[in-house]
Image (cartoon, rainbow, N blue to C red; front, side):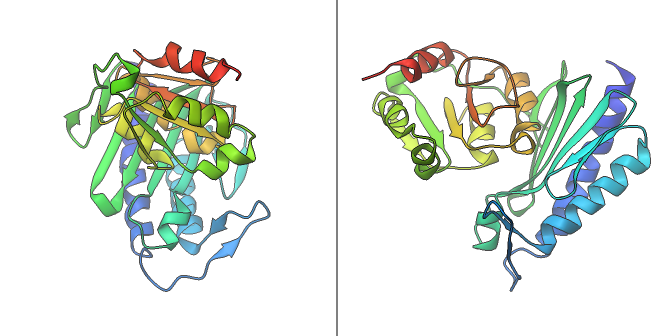
Length: 258
């Protein structure tokens, strides 16, 4: 195991848990919600949690880069970059829905190598380091063995995202060929795939900080992560996570045209 990777991974887990607990202190309270230029919400919980993460991570590894949803991109010189979403699922957070997470992703030379998703309201930490497996708390997790699409569970965030992208017909075509569909949005559908509770998470409208922590968790659990074109990237707004066995079939369906 690369000692530089491991050292950062251990700090990331502890820092994400601490930031998640900080955000939890604001959850289900009378918060003031502000709206950013893209009409996404932000609160003091987002800003304070990100500030804690930035202080902790760059205080420990000052040469690393840092990209935060709230504070922007700050290049480093070490080859490592932290990619942060302090409260992924702010729309749920501000409505008192406990499905939100503090996300910490780590890149090395442009490749994602580690991810942490802390779900404070549920007492769960999803984490993965390349080559070390994926875990929920201390339990190792694996994707499912379902290999037939008609037996699969499909997760998604919001139908409105597919409508906005002009891809609602693609989504509905895929959904019609699966057994069940559930709108577990944001990070949650992805980690459900990683732990084998479903087979496909489909999304369009994400940013890099939404998925940088997610990709290594899905992959270390034995799954596959890509854009709708099949490229293993976190730099597109259209993404798919699957158990791997159904990935190519899903891509083929999304390429169909009525």
